[in-house]
Image (tube, rainbow, N blue to C red; front, side, top):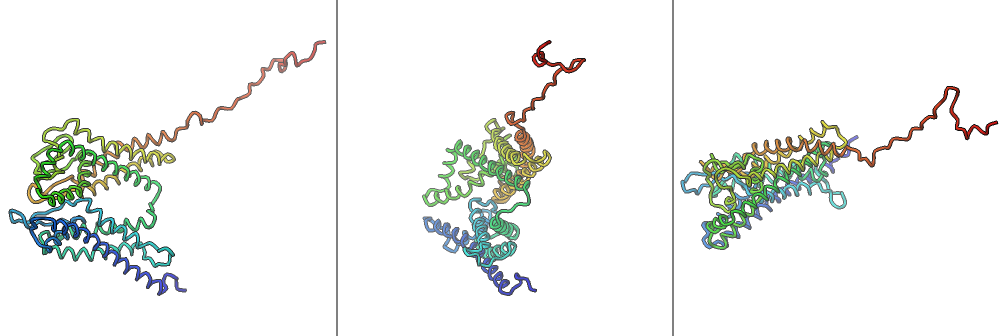
Length: 427
């Protein structure tokens, strides 16, 4: 007997669902590209001295859209005439295409209000949505080759599929209810998420405090970049788009490895080493001054310490019924997951700004990831074990009280001793 899933109507429904998911992926790519194109064209229209026509503005929009997917761009209009790479993606712009792909893949597995709409398999949904999106992306890459910001084909072939497929997979995972392989893996991932958010929040606070401390220098840099109001609005939008990058840089600074400011220049809590090649930009005005670090710079280490403590506390609360070894392994797994997340964010937040000394800017991804693992292991594991032990203790009010043991009556040589009142009257 033929299985019901092999029925031609079912197979046709699934094929239609896959085609619909592919179309949805292409529409998601078009929505993200269109949103950026509107912003770029609005900036071009409001500019009093536009350098190029609408075709040039569309090429810039296509380049920015590719940059938001982790694709490096090649600047051809340099002063030296030599092409220069541009690889720092504003992370706030990255959130737009990732969210669009995530939502499209999640809605693909939605059965509808009556549950009758055919749905593809989870793997088919990921492949169809990502395939439709990447078809549009390939056309954009080809289109960018004729503009002032062509895409680097190597990074386009590596990062673009990875970002799109990862976002589509996360959307399908959300549609399935976010299943996890086990209780300990779930506890480790939740703790890692809490630690990562704490690191990013602390890094954002550190960057904001430093920017406020150097507010005069930041204002001078902002006013020097653009004199007209349209240019200042454009610079302000770019600053807002790079705020998540500043949070990641601040987190890497507190973790210890710091970040590179060009080849041969490194900023860490211990001080600024080398001669930084810093272009004029308001956010870069928050960089620490040269020389050795002081207690103000060392205070940034409180951010990863707090993240590791919260991470370990979360694992300790979840592992009260487990053995100490299992709790320690879960805490170490949380540290590893947090380190992987930090390494990915550090890789996305940095990159080249040009050739020569400008070829390295931002945190080194593997150093930031290893530092996050070490903080989580050295501080998180003891906290997890301590919280687990504290949760397993029994309060005094709940301890069982010892039962009263009756004391036997003393026995004499001639028999049991009986009180005189119980012997009766003498005769």
